[in-house]
Each structure stands twice: as C-alpha cells, then as structure tokens.
Image 1 (tube, helix red, strand yellow):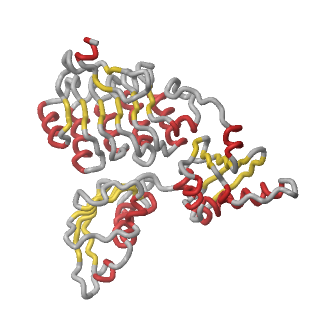
Image 2 (cartoon, rainbow, N blue to C red):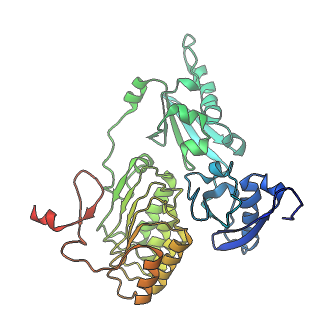
Image 3 (cartoon, rainbow, N blue to C red):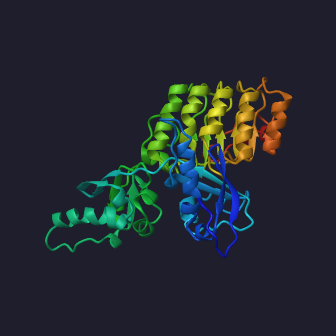
Length: 401
C-alpha cells in the first residue's frame, strides 16, 4: 500500500503466517483503519496470489489467531472479534496470523418444537443476523399459526432452552443474541426449541456411554464428550479418516479435553487424515492427545505439524514408541518454534531413528520434550481411572497400594 504523508510516523513491521512472511508499512491513513483491512486483508491477498491453481486460499473470515511480538492477543478464541478493535502498538515488530477453515456461506437447518418441524436455509445475508432473527422468528411464524386460536403466540424471548444437534447450548438468552454460526456451530443441521421445562423433561432420554464405540456415537454425544478413550482397538488409517469425519460433522467439540488413541495402527495415513479435524476451531479445549504405539512415522508427524494447529490449551502430546525419525522431529520442532503448534510437553522416547541432533532441535523448541526411556517409577503403562477423569502415569505408589 502506498505511503501518504500524515502527522503520524509510518509503522513498519513483519506479518507472518502459513509459511509466508512480508513487511507491511502503515501510514497515518492506514493506521486509522481496522486491523482486518489494514493488516489481515493485504496478507491474505499476497498469500492467495502466490498459490498455484487449486491450492489453499485464505480468507479474512477464517482468521483464528493473532499474536503480536509473541504476546498480547495470542491465539484468542475468536480472533475476528478481537481484531475488530485491535491497534498494532507503535513499537511492534512482528505480527503472526493463524487461519483456520473459512466459515460456510450457507447453513441448512431443521428447526423443531414438539411435533412442528420447519426446514430453513440461511444464506450469507441471514448468517449475518442473530439466532432470534434468522432462526427462531421464521420458525415461530409457522409454529404459532399451527397452534389453537386461544393459545398466546410464542416469542423468541420465551425460549428456555435451545439444543443444537442434540446438545444443549449454555444459555438460550445469549444464543438468541449471537450469530447462527457462532451459537450453533458451522456444521449444525438440527435445532430444537423448548419453551417450557416440562417440554425439556419430556424430550430427555438416556444417553449412551461415551467413548465406547468408534462410529456409533451421535453428533450430540461427540459434543458432550470431555474424554474419548479408544485404545488398543486395532484402529487403522480408515478409522482415522472416519473419526475425522465425525469430529468435523460435530464441530466445534467445545468440551473435548482428552483424546486417547494409543495402542492402535493409525500409521501415517491415519494421522494425516485425523490431523485437520484436531485444529483449534474443531477442538478448542483439547488438552491431551495420546498417539503412542501407532506405527506412526515422520510423514505422519509432518502432517500433524502442518495441518493440525491445535488448541493453545494443548498440554501433552505423546508420540513415543513409534517409527519417527529426525525428519518428523524437525517438522514438529519447526512448527512449535514458529508458533503454529503450541504444546507444553511431548513424549518421544522409543523412536530409535531419532538422532542426537533431533533431540537437540526438539528440546530447544519445546522445554517439555521428553526422550527419556521409561523406568519402573514412571510408566509407560497409564493408570485408567473408572470415573473418566484424565489419565496419569503409573507410579510406584499405585502399585504399593
């Protein structure tokens, strides 16, 4: 963008993300414009212009992380909301942007209350409105006409609960004021409205136990799960792809914190299929990801590093007892150093092909990198409690008990 003389001194800083780095200069006129227009949009245009035909295209709407000099607004839950009022500090030298999948331009819903069901298609114009305006009011225009004449008409404000694909939204009042994509999720297909708690109780039914069967959980089950325990089930690359489809269909999985997949046979292809479904926009609360003993090599780890961009809350990643070499370790270390992959601890022991240089690169990138072979006091057999609380390493005290 051209510099125009103004009272404020021009600001020059680096903008980086998705493998691209460029320098942006903002004069007084551009400094007064919204962050998305002055910083994010020029970056997106430059990135898209360098892609080959059919390559990935970014959009400002898909912005999901903003980091200024390694601090500040690092990986906020919704960077678009924060960026709306964001001003780059005068002393800033580097801005890092992270992008997820672009939001859908259309949402097709079946909205129901009791025995009344209506199909709605929300295009871009309606997606810009609130849930009350775009979803509840159109539904009630049909619902109220079908009620007995003496029945007072329902209004959106009377809704006591709203369920999206079977999962109760935290607050009906708040959901009514939010946009459909923000409140219901990008992949929602059904909305149930309840105007009395008697109706909520009447619709309640026993929930299946979570984490017991891959491929036999509903979208609502996935959205309610805090822990999924699929270990030693002989899962292969096809199962990895199936799990990915289920995750994206139920996205966002706001409650999922612990995913246990160790002791299977996902391999490189299974992990490559699964990695995009573990991105922060799909699993924003993910804290632990266990992938040990899965026949994973460097290609799988590279796919994880390049495609995953996990939740900033990720505290533990286990990749031990696999077939990973330096190439995979370098890719993961680079992603951690670059800020696109945030994790506190990575276990990588029992990967014989990792050299001393691989150990050095990873430990420099991640202070919690663990290459130490297990001892009788620290696993690697995990203790699995019966109340579905997070796992921890088996210790001598557990055996003595």
